Amino acid sequence: MVSRRGSSDTKAIVCIFTDRIRISNNWVSHLSFAGLLGAAGFVFAQQHGLFRNLNNLNLFSGKEKDAGDDSFLVPGLQNLGNNCFLNVILQALASCKDFRSFLQWVLEDARDSVAGELEEQLPLTYALSALLQELCTVGSRRSVSSPRKVMVALTDYATNFNLTSQQDAAEALLHLISSLQEEIVVCYRPSQSSNLSDILFSRNLRMLAPSEGLHGLMELKRWHKHLRGPFDGILGSTLMCRTCSSQISLEFQFFHTLPLSPLLHNGGYNIMFGCTLENCLNKFLDAEKVENYFCYRCWHGAALKYLSVIGAAEIDIEKVRSCGGEDQCDCKTSHHLQRMPWSNSYSHILKQLIIARFPKLLCIQVQRASFNMFEEFKLSGHIAFPLVLDLSLFTPTSIGLNIEERIEMSAEDQKPEASRKHGMYRLVTVVEHFGRTGSGHYTVYRSVRVSSQEEEEDCEELSWFSISDSEVCRVSESDVLGAEASLLFYERL
Image 1 (tube, rainbow, N blue to C red):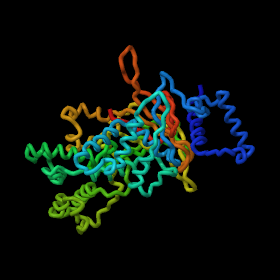
Image 2: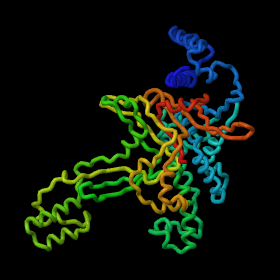
Image 3: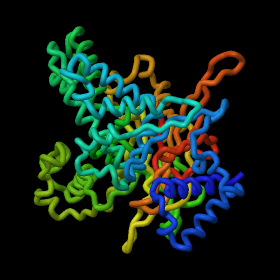
Image 4: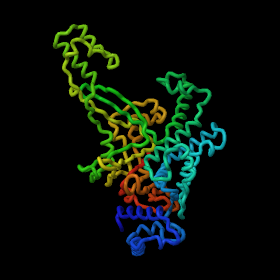
């Protein structure tokens, strides 16, 4: 049996060979002698079993074959002009059950609030939902679906993003999510009996009347469902001074993907051997020292000691002691404190990112593109990733988002012992890139639950498929775990 690395390289060669080259009837007159030798060697290797995985791809058969009684396949996708970057995203989303449910919920909710046909009013949502449902169909025959309707609808929103030339798959995902949000927000209309602005900006929902509070929570939940998709998580950025143990600032921002940098060898051109996804998460979330940052609390503490040493008047000491903060602070203008020696090195400022809200669907982008002073290059090497990821292990500090928790969690889920459950994720899709940055080819591994019949009882088993545009074959978990991943999609358990 050939190695997984050789298997992937073979598929990449075959995909580029079949999807990029168009040979006319008089092809012999256009090929060089070296090209003929290469083609002959390719056919010879295939016939003698040197490329064993090519038999699965069915490249040299003139007609479709059944996959067999014990083999099931999902549909492939047509390549409509070098759009493999979009095809892998569409296949990945098809394996994300929460994303498909989100689209279906939006369409159902919009039937009562949108005038006209949904296909006309929500063309991208409608086309994407239909295509993803089609890609979830499991059959014994090979089939190929078309992404044309999704591409046409997406073009109306992402006008500056060319869908028929090679692009970055992660960028395509972000364009797709932002385009959906732009389309969906139009169909949201708060019920006439509620004032959503009062609900959104209320400091405490418990201040509302009982009936208004319940209705307000329901309306806010509906608003979140429209504008906050399953990929939306929240990152907290905290700035702390270790010297005086004070929190200087706390900011929140939404994220759709987590961009993780791998650990590199000293030269910086290859990923360190044995690097894991957990290493990358620790690197992303580890606290880092901030240089030359002024800590007002440390300065005021030093100022009090300085004024006491020089025997300053009590009124000057009390002014520093009661200072309200940096916005109103004018302590430095004091005659005594202008001469106080000070260095920012007295403070030890740390900045740290914290995942404050776990998304339902976690997309991790492995940043393989790197730069030096001469060129952009791709970081090669394998990063080990798990089938089940416990993200709660990487959130050492709990940041309270009370409204979020009340909306997203049930009363049982809000108990402290249930917090870890919301950080458990299962791998559903792996996107792999072959070739140089800015070119090459994308393929995808996606998981599908396939019905099987054992002991006269219907059950479902998890199967993995390797998909390169229209070509689909069934693979093992070890094949998936051996991929040099560019994107990883995890679904929260």
